[in-house]
Length: 103
Image 1: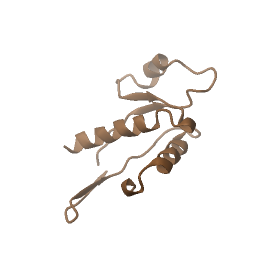
Image 2: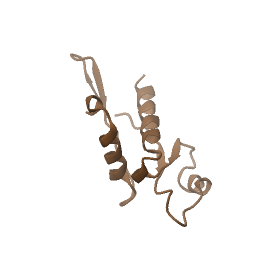
Image 3: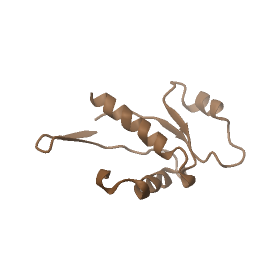
């Protein structure tokens, strides 16, 4: 979803993290918030996929994950949110998708 403020010449977009419980959504957001520039905090549906918790034992290989939950070939990333791995890469990719959708 985007909101246009013509007076300030700003376009504000909302990015939503969606996934299973205990999947790492909050950890991703906490990592981003704690490291983002405070000046940058603040209906275009685009998305990418993050395969989080890649540091755990007995995980499926990324190729099998892609085959099962990403058959459309959307941008996807491996991540370990507690270590910050893949967090900003995922956010950057979805942000670029939002901007290109608005263009």
